[in-house]
Each structure stands twice: as structure tokens, then as C-alpha cells.
Image (cartoon, rainbow, N blue to C red; front, side, top):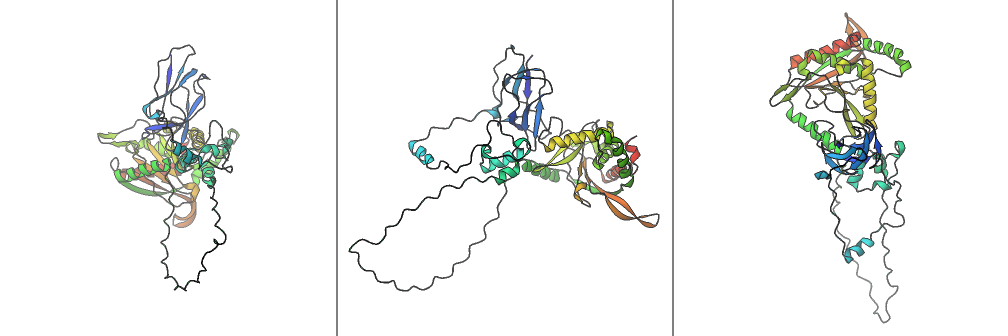
Amino acid sequence: MATEITMPQMGFDMTEGTIAAWLKKEGDPVTKGEPIAEIETDKTTIQIESFSNGILRKIIAQAGQRVPVGHVIGIIADPDEQLEAAQPPASAQPAAPAAPKSNGAAQAESRVQPSADAPQVVNEGRIIATPVARRLAEERGIDLRYVKGTGPEGRITKADVEAFVPPAPPVPTPEPEPIGKPLGSPILKAPEPTPPPAPVAQPAAAPAAKQPLTRMRQTIATRMVASKQQVPHFYITVAVEMDAALALRAQINESLKPEGIKISVNDMVIRAVALALRRFPNMNASFTPEGIEMRDYVNVASAVTVEGGLVTVTVRDTDKKTLKQISQEMTALAERARNNKMQPGDTGGQTFTISNLGMYNVENFIAIVNQPDAGILAVATATPTPVVRNGEIVIRTMMNMTLSGDHRVTDGAEGAQFINEVKRLLENPWSLVL
């Protein structure tokens, strides 16, 4: 039976995606779970896998075309199976052919053909480039066939596009002026001296250059502005003593060293947040005009920095997973995000989000709620700090955390109880492994 390949939805606000490349050709055999195409979204590039075994019988949307979510882009079927005629999605229709040029236009075009110094084609066939590089090239009118990639496997990066310099147009050679003057010309008198010219006003400073917005930056800007305008935020900060958690982390990592697994502080925060969400279901809920939507599952997302911005990756059913499982999943998710190899399900569907800037040596910061979540937790750097314990000043490793909450769903008192539960779990870290 034929299986339709559809444009997946990566996140609740995704409405369409671009076919970055097909990894299989029409007529190629495919197996279930095998990557068959790369899809470019506003934030990243993902690989979609075959939904079944069979033959890639039909490619409906070609590379470079934008397709609405849910529309068919290809068909997998048996070799001798009869297929119905399939039409390309509306937004994926090819552009109409250009009108023929007039003789004058053809002559004008011939005068601007690139010179012998024009760049050489370095990429034949499929072009491998990051989403940011593709968008920047499109904005600057640069043909990626001429750009040499310096990334893994020759992938073209943003830096490669920025460094690409198209050849300057040839400078026309001025015609020489005639030497001397015609015979019989009258002898001219020397011109009368003229007064010096009046001082000329200095021109105004040139306007600052503007960097065009990438699609990722446009998406981030749109979503963050919408969140700040629509969500009434409140903020609560607590300081967490992390010495016990760091000591336990060192013991766990030593025991997991033969398996090549390393637990991070963020993994411990994810686990603590997931357990705290069980106790405070309003923090796991979402506001809708019809009422508060209570989720019966816990999916914790974490922000990951990628070229040109950030994406959030989601650990699903987080409360049911161990620290070891969370660490393995987060490592794989972050690696796919940074290498533009994300898969459907890697992002979106979260019920709560964590933004951790601990690796950047920050004391404190505030994050914007990632709709439709009820809250987001901003995690700063764990730093040795003088504190008072039992009337004495001692040094402890302290880490500030700030909760941003949606006041339509929850209140300050409940938010304070929630963040203090996360604090309690981190300061009593054995509760994270039991």
C-alpha cells in the first residue's frame, strides 16, 4: 500500500517548511526509519525518515520549494503498485517561465556577462549548507554554487557566505582625448584669476549599515515580542547551594566513565524541574481562551545555542526518565541541533522550558516565557560565594535561578513554592537518583 510522505510540523507555530535536499532519488529502495530528505524550518534543518519499507516512487516537492505543513511531498510504494496522479502543493508550484528577451535586452545582458575573473563553480549537484548560510546567501543574491564550504564534509557556513567576495565589474577604459589643437586655432589668453571657492559644508555621516534579518532571527523576534505583549510575566529568584549536587555528580560520572556518559549540571536541573512539575501541575499547564489546559505528561525543553540563534529541544516524559537517560537524550538532541540534523519530535511539545547560561559566567538573568508554557527557568553560573551558615561566613558554591511565570495560569505564591521545590531537590541531590 502506498505511503504518503508529508511535511512534518516542528513546533506549534510552524506552518511551512522548505525541502533542503532529497537524500534519495525516485526509484531508490528505502527502509523504515532511514533518512530520506532534509527539511529546513525557520530555525534549523531536520532529517525526515521513511515511514515504511518500499520504493521512493514519486518526489512531488522538489529541493528548494516551500511546502505547507501536512502537505504531501513524496510517495513510497511497491515497485509495481499503481499510483494516482499527484499534484505539487499549492505553494510548491514551479515559477512560470520567463518571457523571451528582446534584442535590445539581450544585447544589454551580453554587456554585463561576468569577465574571465568571475568565480568558478565549486559545488556541483547537491549543495550542503547551513540554514543561516542559505538565508544569508538568498538575501545577498549569492549563488552557493560558487561558495567554497569550510564546514564538515564541505558544508557551507555563514562565515563562508560572509567571506565570499563577488568579482568587481570591469572598469571601462576612457577614450583618449586628442593631443594638441587643430591648425589655425586662435591663440587663447590666460584666464583671469578667480576668487577662491566658498567653503563647502561637510556631508552628513553615512547611515549605519543594517544586517538583514535571517528567518531564524525573524521567528525569534516575532515569538518573543508576542510573549512579552500577551503574557503577564512575574519573576522569582532563589539561590541554590550546589556543593552536594556537584559532589554527587562527580561520583556518578566516575561510575559512568566506562560507558562514556557524563552527567551535566543542566541534566540535574532538568530532572529536578520534572519532579517539581509533578507536585505543582499548574506550572505544567497552559493558558487558552477557553480555560487552563492541564497536561497529564511532563515534557521539559532546554534552549540550545546554534549558529545564528537558538532552538529548544525537548526531552519527553522527562519525569519518568533517570539522570542517565536524560543525559544521553540531551547529548543526542543538542548534537543534532548544532549539526542541522534534527528529527521530527526533537523540538516542540514542551510543557516547561529551561534556559541555562551557566557556561557563560553570569550571576543572574531573566528569560521570556516560551509560549504556550506556564513558565521558564533561567539558570545562572554556579560560583564559590561567601555565605552565612550557623552565624559564620563560609564559602559555598551558589547558583541563582529565576522563574518567569505566566500570571494568567499561576501566581507568585505557587511560583515561589515551585522554585523552592526545585531548590530543595538540587540541595538534596540523592532525591534525583532514587
